[in-house]
Image: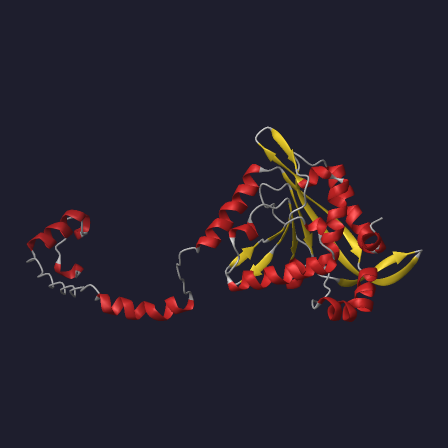
Length: 291
């Protein structure tokens, strides 16, 4: 806009707003430049999307697979245990030196005579039987509003397999000696890994022992195996500094865990049960002499 082209009608020839508007109205309207046509946006092809997303998806792969029947059953029972029991866990520790010394002293002769290795599990089974006899409530189960006290000792031994955790049962285990226990454990372990365990091998059970120590577990809170009201957890043996007679010494220590149903088992019983196992293992002559 050139002011020299506008005739001012104001005082002393000054331009007014009206002068400017009149001048603009007299001018021919300028042609509006045509807007550039918007480029047509075509949807990306399905093939392009798939190819473009492939590298990213490879960085975060997912796979959906159905549960095996065994895994689904295990999941069902574990959830049942959590929902239907007042589960609590108590802990203790045991000095394994006496058991280790005894095992090292006799393991060669034991294997030569019985054709099976002497492991730690047989000591824990024997110690558990002694403790269960002393505290029968831990060998019991709840059925509705009733408590069933079992007058026999059927111990489940948790075995890990490629298909999942299986718990074969040693029936009337209190009638077995060390060799019988070790042979049964080896036999069940082989059957479990081969997938040839029968229903009779798995049914029943009044108490369970699980050993996370074989995988390096230091401590855990094992889940009950219903309808049982308690389960003993073994763990890895580690050298630790402990105080004996006012002196700091190194001893092979294992932490023990007992998970139990507080509806049936009092805390006092659970603690004393673990103490009994601890005493049997720290002085294994109790197990050998049945005293």
